View 1 (cartoon, rainbow, N blue to C red):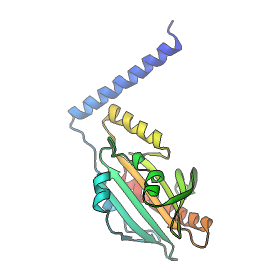
View 2: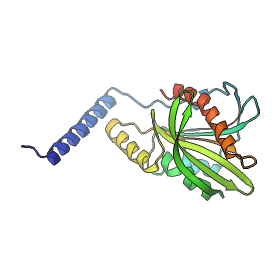
View 3: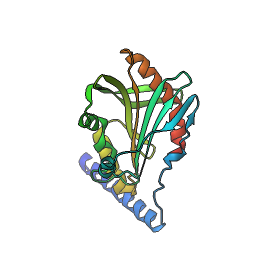
View 4: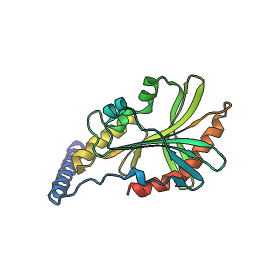
Length: 215
C-alpha cells in the first residue's frame, strides 16, 4: 500500500515531469512570450483623461532594467487626480522582479515615511481585486497607494508568493513575464476616505482596459 507521503511525492513528480514535457514541446514549437504593448493603454479611460509623465532617471533604469514601463497622470471630469505606474519585464529573473521592487522597500529608500500598510479586497464595477493599500508621507505631502503584482493573468499582493510563483512558472512553463501596477492619489485635508474612493473609481475604468493588454 502506498503511503500518503509516497502518493504526494508521486503526484508532485508527475506534475514536474508534465511541466517539463510542456516546456520542451513549447520550445520545439518555437513558442515565445509576447511582450505587452503598454503604450496601447488608452489615454482616455471613460471619464479619465491621461497625460504622459517624465520618464525614469538613468539610475532607476539601470537598477530596474524594465522591458517596458508607463507613467501617467489621469484626471477625472471633476478634476480628481490619479498617478499610474506600470512596470513590466518580459522575463523576471534575479533582481529584476516586481516583488523585489515593492513600494514597501522603494518608497522609504526614496524618502517616504510609511504610516500604514495592509492588503485588502476592493470592489470595482468589474468584480473585486485584492491589492496592497499603503499610506505614505514625504515632507508635507501624504499619498494613498494601491498596488499589486502580476504574472500573466495571475495577481498577487504578497511578495514571497509572487517570487515563488514566478520561479515555478519559469521552470514548468518557461514563462516569467509580469510586473507591478501602482496607482496613487494625494490625501487632501486628511480625507483618506475620499482619496480611496477616487482610486476605486479609477480602477473600475482601468482594470478592463489593462486586461485587454494582458490576454
